[in-house]
Image (cartoon, rainbow, N blue to C red; front, side, top):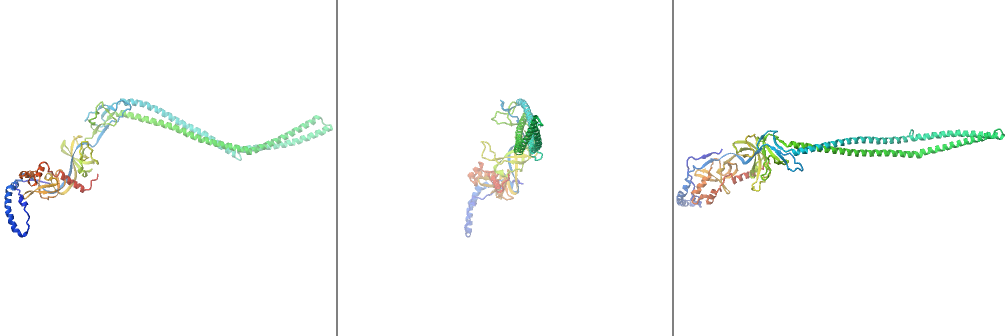
Length: 582
């Protein structure tokens, strides 16, 4: 720990005179006595000058100076930023009611809305929108849905009828094909086929004709013998003319019957030849063509059935899809009517969404709200976070997961545990009035649940970046800096001395001393008192630093280590360390 020690007894500070500082070195060792005498003679006026000019300056007491010990210890690197509080979990309440095309009003008017800032529970009514236009549209959609349902039923019936017709027509055509196949096979059968049976029948007729020819031939021989016998008797006078003529007629008749039988035999033989050659080939071609025609008819019926069934199915699917769309539209319109009553999805405090100040729209009763417009929000006031911005010079030290402390300005006695949640990758764009300074939005969440904290309150965030152990530190007010010169005033035997130092890392209270001081030194915590004393006691108002430096101090030219030098110390450490993982 750094301790602050205030001196209780005054001490005089003795500083060498200008004559001492400007004394030339001894040139040769052999003339030591001569030079010693010369120095003694020269020292007399210098001593008098120091007595009259310098001694009043350093004889002043140092009890007005505050000292602190320089000791090794632990340096906590903390980045402190200001920000505003907001809820970690904000539930947005949107207008989910669509505009009706052709309606003269853009948006849906608010009939009633819960007062701003009210505390609501889950399920409480937040906003009621005007549902009159949506109810009228819902009634028309009910009729359209019923009509689509009727068309869908008719389309399904036609589809089923087409399936039955296709099955019947296919069965009939397929039966014709099977019969044609069977008829062709029956014609081609060499034993029991139709052709063979016809041939056998003709052959049996030929056999019958042959038998009849034999009988006719025998009858002809008989009639011939009878005719010859009658004619012989007629010549002998034993038979009359009538008997002769009758025998002749019977003979002619027998001869005619025999000739007829012979002609019939020729006809049957020709018929058999025609049946076995020409008619067989013709019937075979007819039956084969009939089978092929039946098969083509079956294929055509299949194609027609598929086309008609596809057409009926398409009409049915179109009717089903139309009904589905109408039902979806009906359901959406019903939901639109229901969404005119907006209830709280969770408990919280009602916060109207602030519109742009140039806009005439505001959240109030009677005002129309657009689709997807955020009407209000329900922030969870138990879990809060701080939205802040960090400077680009310390961005490499800030990363997600770092611990932090949050202090709300409205409740300065409370300190909340925080955690760095996110760090923006790109800097804030800012407005047209923003400067060139780059800052990155950072979200720090408060780990525990809080009370009485509202969104928008100012908060101070202290992010613990790192801890440097076993380093020399001094308070930042003990370090002075003008341009590139950085120093501290330390206690010495003669009062105080100016000691140039090299700075390292720093926080808001302490800065690391890399060189220039050592453990046990005591630094002055109010160095401006020394600068003002030197300015007042010097003849030209500047002391040993000169008038220009004194004027720079009074004008604010001197700075503590929390200024540019401390910033450079942090940047040099950042350059030496590997970049933080984002």
